[in-house]
Image (cartoon, rainbow, N blue to C red; front, side, top):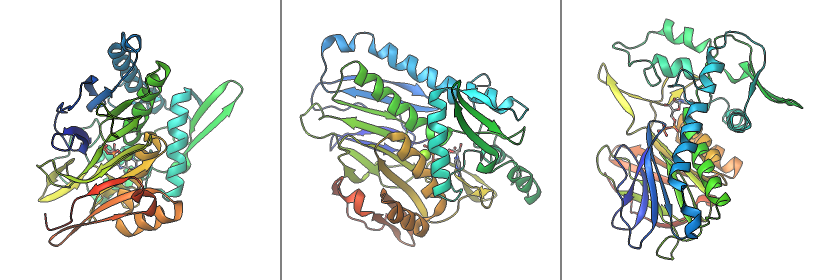
Length: 350
Ligand code: ADP
Ligand code: MG
């Protein structure tokens, strides 16, 4: 549940943890903001023909409600919940939007060798990060093994014919969790709405996913900041100019709880069935869409620093990693990411 604030000093938008967005502009702009998908969204339009803005706030909030109604595992009557509740194995008709998310998820799932796995839901719920309550005692190996038997991308098939797109599970109680991609999907969706209305200077952010186009109200590039991983403070570690791309950050330093003295992250390694424990604390990806970026960031978090670096280099991804060390943290960026960086804070002990 990454959220955002506008970084007051530099005028950058900070990709961060759990505070409400704060508005800070050094030039007038049209904004719309609110809550969706358990997080906050914010739309800033730098300039647009006045007629493009008529009724726009209402349209944005309606669009986000529709996306949520499609993808949420928290709404028992969402399209996704209907698929999850269906206790059969016949192909089910799905919408084009749902097919777009699932095909992205399956492709990234394969590339990350199952580290990003949208069937991880039973494990997410077991560890208390889904609609189910947090456990009061650590799940035991038997419970983990039982949940793991319900997890695996091989159990899910996406297909298409003249009638439309279909999703099929070969286990009746397979449970699909699209939480990790919903923010990116919604971000792109709002951006497409703006484009359709003739708006072409905007910034859209939903949780930890952002997309920008054109220049900011000041006439300079939109600046998006990647947060330094701390529990409390909002400090920028690096600032990028997205040049029309989407960005998403996944971090393990804000969304966690403690049980038996252990910090449990909301990102689960499907290979072990347990919350990730390694030292990679934040993964940021820039891609052509926010959906694509949002899919990769979670997979990279699961893989840990070394494997995430290898994969980024192999796939030519624009990636920024922050890894905890004994006395602070270190950062790494792929060559593709460098092209977007405007400035970077010095790395020192945090
Ligand atoms: P955030 O919610 O902080 O934006 P992510 O985009 O990384 O973070 O999504 C985290 C959510 O993704 C979890 O709350 C959980 O529902 C789901 N999830 C956890 N582990 C995985 C995984 N290995 N693959 C896919 N989804 C996961
Ligand atoms: Mg993600």
